[in-house]
Amino acid sequence: MNDRVPRLPPLNALRVFHAVMRYRSFRKAADELFVSPQAVSQQIKLLEDTLGIMLFDRKGRMVDPTEQAILLAHFVQAGFDEFAEGVRRVTKTGHRNRINVNASPYFATRYLMDRLEQFRTTMPGVVLQLTTMVEIPDFSRDDIDVSVQWGFGEWAEFDQTLLVRDPKIICCAPALAHRVRKPEDLLSMTLLHPVLATNLWQKVLRHLDLQDIEAKGDVQFQDAATMRRATLAGMGMGLVSAIDAIDDLRQGRLIAPLGIDALSTMKEEDIPGFYLVVPRGYRRVKTIAAFCDWIKGEDWSAMLRREMVTDDIPYTI
Image 1: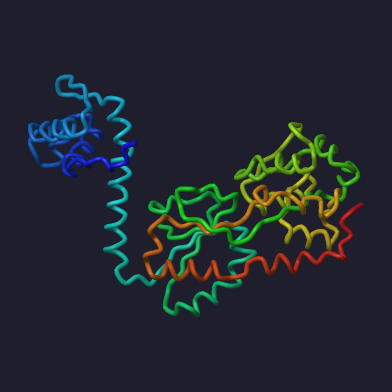
Image 2: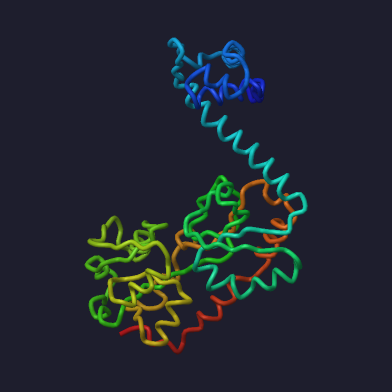
């Protein structure tokens, strides 16, 4: 097997290729680059000779990219985007005193807000900007440095660290509780799904030994708070985060008809969690590295352990 890294073509040839792909024209690419069309043609010929492939079918003044050119263009675009981001960050943040953090709305309100001042005391003078987008951000476009995302750790293109699991409790409004006496009864109920993990109920049903069975109806929600409100309103069966569920169970607002421990032995990989997600290389910035070290060093599961003392909860019918 040949593991040698292929020789990269000249950067200028890739820059010309990038322009030709945008305009599908040597002349328009030449106008943008302030060179002659002949110079553009020479650079494309150099690139084709270096790669040993044909990149364009010439048709008069217009050119059609080949399949190989279309594939290459995606990687060249990504490369130039990375160059631009690196230049932007170096020129904008030479002595950076700001960090832009995105966090899942639930993690931000339930976990993070009460502890942010602790980070600020470790990095006095640092300006922290917090946003709460549910979807994973486009770190470059949205100007986000680090993010805390809810899910199952499926962001392989980034560095990611699990901060805390988000165990769920099957809950419903008291008016619906009499309809669920055994796991099979869930299949006749409306199931409330999180948009970011529409397969979570299937994991739950498998755990309850309901294999390869499709539920009859469902409703999807973008965030945990909306799903909880829908559960309280009696729209169906909700998978409510344990901290919220326990509070609602204590107050009698919700019922756990299958018991509060019905999902306590689920496989860890089937339990969602909150993950610190950082683009590779961002931690070279001092403030970003400091925030990452701080948030990974905190014991985020302490509140969950404290709330899971549930001897006083009347959680069944």
